[in-house]
Length: 303
Image (cartoon, rainbow, N blue to C red):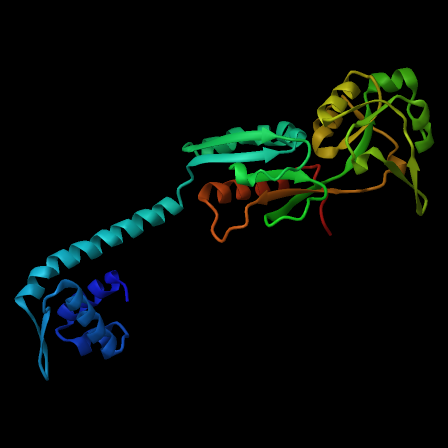
């Protein structure tokens, strides 16, 4: 039995007047009270109670020790209360690693509201096109899409985004709009330079699927480079809806081959370290991000 529990039982015994009453009031066995008092007496080297057949009388040493015991118990209660408050306080540094395009076109729009809500919090945001486990380097949360590697961390699907073939109206005015997927072979197209399932341009035709082997004059490591080329009327690209949603809504880009579109929603995951208890700042961001993603027009809803 720990020292803190012994002190509590000692105070209960004084308040109740005897060991049996203290045991009944706090749902303990009488022997538990007796053993706790005996252990405390052995620890202190003094008698705290005079035992009698009908009652137990606190000794002078016990009476003198009572205020100190009460002070310890009160201090522990204050400490527990402070710890409980700390567990709810959203403060400190939150380190996030995210897909560059998601960070730029989604997170940055929502971040001011999140920071205003939690003024004691500081956010450090880093980006990378491919998922890398950086949790041992202090990252709290990672946001990435596609297939994640096996890991001991917890991944929550927060949404899914379709991918769309698109181009600028001015490019289409000069070169014409492709009417069927095979028309892409005579257009300038751009792709990613790393291995990606989105480098394979698949379309639906009737009940089947056709893959067009587009030849790209240039390829890039980041989707934003592809987007900029499309906006500059340089050619046709295939990008995530969360990336180009605003461009489509504003008419800066036009989605192509809608009659042949093959829905292939790519999941977006929020990953955090697998722990029993998460810090308030992590919980706050997870709740905030899920709420924001749920309201976006680009999110593919699950049936």
